[in-house]
Amino acid sequence: MHDGWRVLPIAALVLAPAAVYATEYLSVEAAQRAAFPEATAFVPVPLNLDAEARARLAEVAHPPGAHDPRVWRAMAGGKLLGTFYADAVIGKQEYIGYSLALDAAGHVLRVDILDYRETHGWEIRNASWRAQFTGKSATDPVEVGRDIANISGATLSCHHVTDGVRRLLALNALLPRP
Image (cartoon, rainbow, N blue to C red; front, side, top):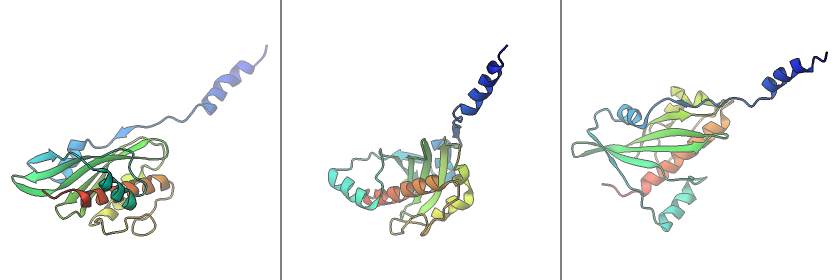
């Protein structure tokens, strides 16, 4: 009798593709509340960027985004607290959902990872890495290797989230103030 049938299940396990781990860490609503606990309303901001504004954004934000982020103004009564963005960037193969909260002057309050689907690079969720963005504005480089540190094993995630934050900072500078 041939023992080849025993090798097949083992070979199938070894050659099977790695599982993708999709984990939601925060909902958009939870991230909004964490960034602006005193907010009484989150008012959606429609993005009506014309071709000229998109061209200016593309000059500053490399690479340009694949889609427009969702944007809200955080309000406490009639007072503007800041702006909240929910966006996604490509990791290695899957999207990384993240949020960016800016104060009323356009400085980063916090960056949160909303969901992560890759098998590697999850270290970008570490508070110490995300804290590097705090206080940054559209006038800062916001670039890995310059003012944002890389994480070995999470290089693509670091670069792509950093690129996304830089793009949103540039976008925020183009939006009309309320």
